[in-house]
Image: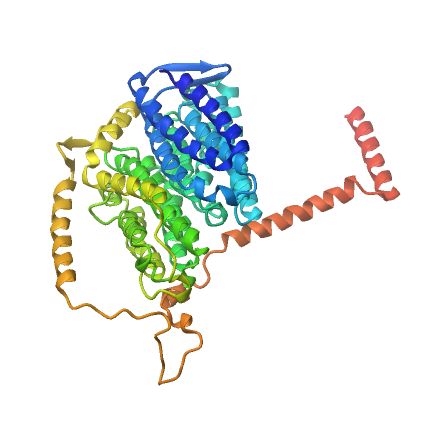
Length: 607
């Protein structure tokens, strides 16, 4: 089996899914599960062909380890999320179109990760942007899809300019060969670097291009938000990877000004990643909507991934690549649990929920494990990846970036705990007394993702060995692995031993919980104040104003979206002014332009 066979098969299955959806939308939704599972199987079958090049019409591809790694992460998220499609498909305005776009966006990501030339890369990228834009429109708000598309389009067009500029210099569209022509041209290389990586920054949600994430994630259909956060934002990480490997940024900028031993252009991008960690953390803490909270969490975690990849070294790079899969699994899991809660309750607002643990214990447990990984707590994958990134930053003496990464790790405890307490713990409102746990079909993806998250945390070396191959492919010194131990300059980490220690602690806590005296369950309405009946007891539920003191400290966050809106207003005003000059029905304006044209004609003849 070849990569071309995989792509043609997927396109055929997408067409079949669309036709089945026209007949029976639910049957088509089930077929998205089958297709994504078939994709995983086919990717495993072609792994032994890494290094081979392929062509399909004017598209050219190369099967690489890093492309295979990114594709496996992406397909895993698509496959597990697809289990929700049959339950939401009846709510879609265009169910057949949704099923088709869902699979076509998956195909676009695979084509992009294996792209060998700029044309293939750009067309596959735009395929994902357009299909995801149409899917987001099927959610709560069309404005969110507009913002998403505008930010993506700006990144795409600027990156297209970089591709055209490189082609003009090199005369080829083959990515690695074209970038090599920039060697010895620092000014041109600087322009290309910033314009090329812009698409990645906009997709991964790096400050100040992060504004689309909370809007799109919050408004997208519940079945697609896990794909946006766990999968599609990782496309930006792939562009960052190309920026330091195919572009060879460290070699190109070797003679430029450095900051803390890192070329200034790369350090500037890493600073944006650090700012994203802080901004994403602070804004996540402030949210009442669980999906928007998780979206801002993706902003923060995108900063970790970007910093790790751009450091391009033995330890931090491995941490960044490991964090890519750790966050993908945990974020997809968290979004799926919130989607299931929304399916049962009809809301994602935390202030309207509470006590879901009494009706949805499985969903609660799965969310708990997911946030343990997102917060970087052992023995989950997020702990190992963040540990490696912090080790790499410490080795290089990058104190500012390390401080931001540490702040994000501490702050993540706050924002992941908020949905845990406000949605699942506490008192159950009477209107939710009759809701039920997710059915077995919805529980399957939760089980699969939870097991994967745990395995990555306990046996990270299985994934790190693939990452070591990527490092070898990229010309970086490989991460040192001895058995199940990770060896770095400051020490070693045996994730299995960490798991055993935490397992003992969990068992002790479980025994204490079982033997302790049981508390009396208190309902939401069981409240009183000085013997006075409370007419609105929901206001006393601690899901309201959960972090009020902290929110007062950050009452006026940096209004990036407001700045963009002001800029758009000014652009509209300039457009109206230009329209009034060139499209006016007033005779005076027409005479004015006739005079200008004649003046230019005669002056041009004289000159």
